[in-house]
Length: 243
Image (tube, rainbow, N blue to C red; front, side):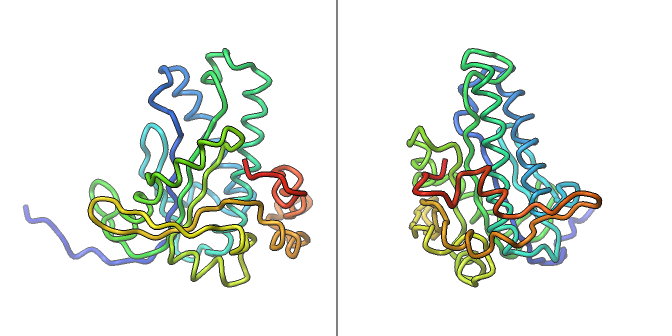
């Protein structure tokens, strides 16, 4: 039987996430980390008005590569989703802290995560999407500069967006995260050069400008506003570091 290589080329938003230090956990700790990461992704998507049930996911033990559906607003993904992710991660780690560092059900410590975002072209394949976009987001996720952000024990989340997403989305003024919160980085991997932007400091200006814009308005519930997320995350406060 011949192989059909005539799949359509599509343009998608991509999210890649990975648990730092996953291989050092025992089986029970890995399972707890997986459940907690799934909960964080669910809550982040909900806060941004998205649903993970609409995502196409390529799952690994310590994370996933997700393709978001066509028509997803890129500014929501680059801004509101990131803010919601950090808020949900703080909530999970508060529960882990209260359980104690030696509780095996909580994996023995805080959940620390790397997150990469990109948009570009790809085509479906039998083992996952093929094309330039999945390669770019994975190289950014695995990059040394992103990993080094988590050398700071006060951080639990390290975020990078691709050069294309920064230029097209973050700098547009429609994103909840301002360009001043990012630092450009150049990554060399597998003989190729990739450019991205690390989220390195609190995004106070843009969050304050948009703090009255509803993020989600579920039926019967009051809308979640960026001001509420700011209180949960600490982002936009008075000099607080982005954990």
